[in-house]
Amino acid sequence: MDQEEISQLIKEKRWSELKEGIVNLHPVDLASLLSQLEPDERKRIVKMVPHETVENLLPELPKDLLTEVILAFPARKSAQLLSELPPDEMTDVLKDLTPEIRKTVFRHFSKKDSEEARDLLKYPSDTAGGLMTTEVPLLPETLTVKEALAFMREKAKEFETIYYIYLGKKDGTLSGVVSLRDIVLALPNARLIDLGKSGVISVTPDVDQEEVARLIARYDFFALPVVDKEGKLLGMVTVDDVVDVIMDEATEDITRIGGTQPLKESYLFSSPYTLVKSRVVWLLLLFGAATVSSSIIRNFKEVLTSVVTLAFFIPLIIDTGGNTGSQSSTLMIRSMATGEIKYTHLYTIIVRELFVGTMLGLLVATVGFILALFINVSFMVSVTVATTIIAVVIAANILGATLPLLIKKMGFD
Image 1 (tube, rainbow, N blue to C red):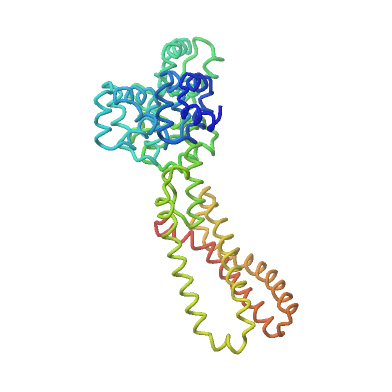
Image 2 (image 1 turned 180 degrees about the vertical axis):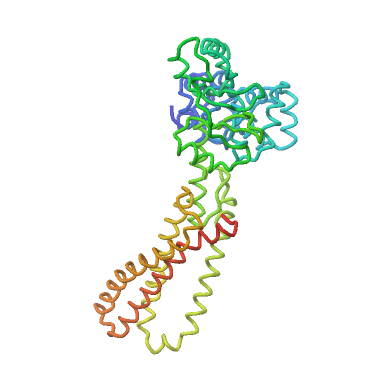
């Protein structure tokens, strides 16, 4: 069942056929299909399917649709659906709600859900605290394997993942971690403290989400514990949340490189006004920069009048400089995003890009020189064009590579 079929069934009010087709869809396919429909159609569909189907659907929805689907129901049902989400996803939805709606939803929360939500709401969304779930298996380090397995059989469904079992001391501080695999393979009387690994790599709740993603990727973790200043376990960030972070950060970097502001919602759900707003600032700034270039060229109108041929090469030279700068800045921004390049590498980068720029300039200038001769331009003009190309490529290469570092050093993204 595709978008056209569903829209047709809705138009013809064939509700029973529609319900039957939707219930049989895989949650991932249903989420994908809902994202292509109009808001009114989505609202009608989610209201007609069983509660179990909605439950399975919610984890598969993108963030911009998750809030919309939950708010399609009355406050009591919305609160029920929210409470069934992992704590980190529940908090994301609550942050998207207006204060009035959030207050109404809280009235229908249990005491436990209310306390949990309020604890997580205090953390910014782009930090470890904003990403973490509090549904974490934490066992006393003195337990035996037999006792740990008995506990996990009883409580496993309460945790988001049980791949890692965290160990704690009597005062609640994190002392180690052991995988479920190691527990299953160990002897029943073995103690967790002897199986676990000490010196657990962890983060505090205020650590930026990019750093969390780097740590999980670097150490191939399935989850990363989040602790307070005293070392007590607050929660954990799971790898599935980090995948979302990586995609979001990559999207943000790409849109900024392209000279636009990142969209808060997906492209299809962004209004034309939002799209204009995200692009107009940089267009105006670039237009202003081009105006400066035009003013400079105007000051050399006498030279251009005497050697009109030079004017033919201005667009070529400007585009070559722009392309060179874009290449080097893109490479540098990506290296900065992965943590490979830091401000301390500035001198090395300048020397390297000076050499690279010179080599590129000579190669491109050679082609430019031959092109100028081929179209019957004088030898001196050809030399002038080639020399200018070399200078422009070197300058653009160094500026493109160093500006991102300098801007980052000044505290800007």
